Length: 69
Image 1 (tube, rainbow, N blue to C red):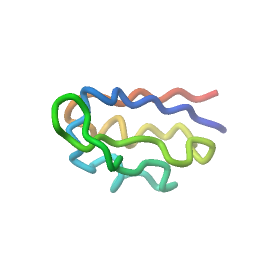
Image 2 (cartoon, rainbow, N blue to C red):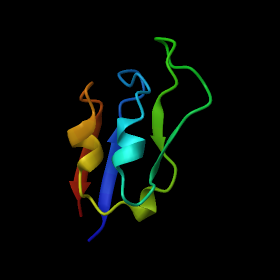
Image 3 (tube, helix red, strand yellow):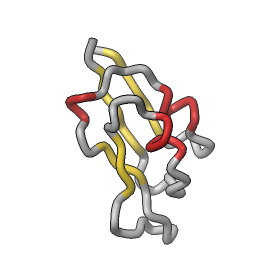
Image 4 (tube, helix red, strand yellow):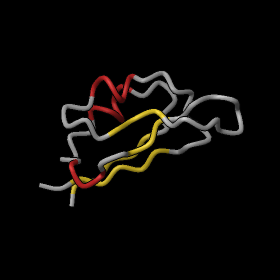
């Protein structure tokens, strides 16, 4: 089953909980600041997402949405 991940760049504070929780290594931390001055997370390999939603469950800022296709 394939998943789709969307990360709200401006809500993310770069805590890396999503990066650490993703079993497929889909998410990385960007090298550019967002408007709040944080390095946000972004999907590096969205095609590998299984839709498990562990990243969304771990996100304290509710900045991640995941769907299964």
